[in-house]
Every structure is written in structure tokens, then in C-alpha cells.
Amino acid sequence: MNIVFQSLYFFLPAYFANMAPIFFKKIPLLNSPVDFGKKFKGKPIFGKNKTWRGIIIAPFMGLLIFFLQQQLYGVELFRNLSLIEYSHFSIWFGFVMGLGAILGDLVKSYFKRQEGIKSGKSWPIYDQIDFVAGGLLFSFFFHVPDALVAFIIFLASPVLHFLVNTVAFRLGIR
Image (cartoon, rainbow, N blue to C red; front, side, top):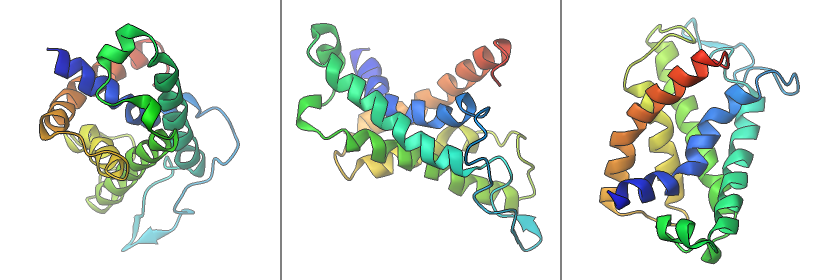
């Protein structure tokens, strides 16, 4: 069971990066769509909800979370929860993982729009694993996690996505 918690803890920068655009949506800065409202084959490329603010804030949220993990690494509880020795990695690891997460979401949005699925409408499974694929893929620049860790992250993320969205909805955040 420890490997499950370790895997989720390892992936925290991507989880927080994926949630960052929602928490910062009220900030009017950089609120313009990434696709500038352009269309491809008559359909939006990414949609109006994919903004430059989200693309920029997500990697920095990943960096911040990774920095906090580095600071907590000195505490035995967090060191035991760690799959990697955080002191041996640059905080840019968190930035890159966060960037991968948000770009994974962006790629999924492109395909979602091309399938005719509107922004905000559910696309089961894809909505839950898009950022996971991107975050894991980009993490390879710094560290390639074991296949079991990747499997656990892919398996647990849809469940976590559902739980977090339920709580966010009840709190009026989403």
C-alpha cells in the first residue's frame, strides 16, 4: 500500500498543475484563449476555456509543489513517502511535470473539440488521464518512474479526479 501513496506523492506537482487553472480563473490577467478563437475545419482548436493564464500558471504551480516537496524531504514522514531523493533534483523537475500535465490537457482538448464535444462537457476517461500522460511523459526528462508507479498513477487518477471534482463542486469552486 505504501507504493500507492508514494506514487501519488511523486505525482503531486502534476496534480496541482492540472488544478491550477481552476483556482486562478478569477484573475483577469492573460485570460485570452490559447487558440485566439481560431478554428480548424470549422471547429474551435482548443476552446475558449484553454487560456494563456492556465498554460503559464500550471508549470509554476508544479514548480512550487516540487519546491515544497524538497523542503519537506528533511522530515522523516515525507522522506519515507518519497520515491526520489528530492535534494538531488532541480525544482525545474516540478515545472516540467506541470508543463507536461497542462499540455496533455491541451492536446486532449484539441481532439475533444474535433470530436464536436463542447467545452465543459465530459469526455470520460480522456478527461481524467490526459494530464497524467503529459505529466509522466515530461517527467522522463528528469526521472523515469517504474512501470508499477506509472500504472498506479494511471489507475488512481480517474478516482482522484472524480473525488476532487465532487469536493470542488460542493465548495462552489467548480
